[in-house]
Length: 243
Image (cartoon, rainbow, N blue to C red):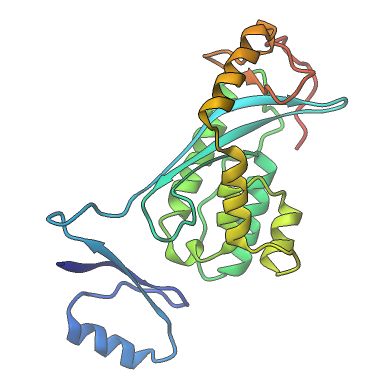
């Protein structure tokens, strides 16, 4: 099997690309003997496909409780990369969870300048489709950039954030080893909970036929989460978004 080295980068700081030229590689290793080198391997087109990571931030939905309302977004991941425990996943996250993630990633990779999140403005309205879509695009660009960095991909918090529904506190507990389950266990367990088998899918379709049509999300614009029993259609909430 013909293999070629590509996208080789240093995990520890400082970081630089390593040429596939063997003499150049050995020279740089002799200059920095204490560094750990991560080499990404990919098969040549003759034998297979290169690694890829597709990330989409989509389907903004209004979530409401008694006092507040906010928008959350679906994060869809599809990849063949060995860096990921699951090759396909979908989770929902809100803006302030993205803020938490960026702070944690930055604290663990102080020499890397992380991309910025979309700016938070006091004029943001959950009822303004332009505001919501602008934020969605910014969040997607943020994830696309950080998923290209091997140093950040080595942080378990990132994987738990995009492939489980654990809250930030539970993510910290898991990463710190204070839970009975490992990072991989958490990701696999969430994937199993989300899996739909044929019988379950048919039962779900039958239940939806009897559901009030107002509880379904619109196919365009903003929808309300079907998980929120108090959300029925788009009735223009005037409750301000919780930060």
